[in-house]
Length: 225
Ligand code: DC
Picture 1 (cartoon, rainbow, N blue to C red):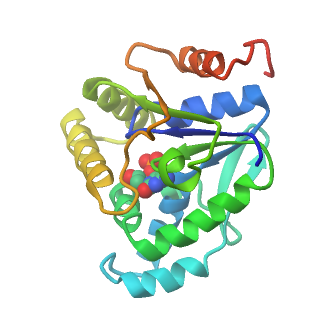
Picture 2 (cartoon, rainbow, N blue to C red; picture 1 turned 90 degrees about the horizontal axis):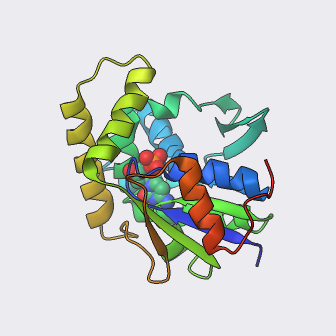
Picture 3 (cartoon, rainbow, N blue to C red; picture 1 turned 30 degrees about the vertical axis):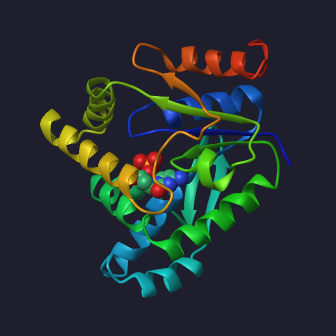
């Protein structure tokens, strides 16, 4: 099996920032599996379908062409020929992605695609079930967490920086709701794998987290970048 690092954790725990930085340092590919569920949610929304319509969603999902393309320093998400990188970050998609991710047929298609991507080279894979379900055999597993207040702050600042007019309270409410859903669903609920190293990122910078991860992997910090 190729070198594989998994990073799981709740919203705002720092997975994406850390995953990207780590992949760059290690010169591995980076896989944002949340973006995949977001792309499906977007397709379903555009098709005007209800999330309850599980059978049809499964059919639509297996026909979707979700790809990641490196453009300069950024990784773009494509749905067919369309760059949906920005569209999938719309607030409305947050909860929809969480809703569709609880559907069995959707997860089956995604897991197959995620494993195919991992077979193509060294990978940092980030999401909710990377270490528990998709890659249980990964050599390096991490679970990031942080205090609720810090996670809410990170999300709030992110959305403010995008120019959204939103209250901190609403961000908190949405975050709690989504995490509850992701942690309490029947299929692949968010939880640390038994052999995952748990890192509390509350007081750490992204680079500080990357350092910890690399230390745990026994890799010197002068690699890459
Ligand atoms: O990481 P994110 O916020 O972009 O993820 C959006 C949703 O996708 C998240 O609320 C739950 C779902 N998801 C999942 O079920 N499994 C994954 N591996 C990644 C994301």
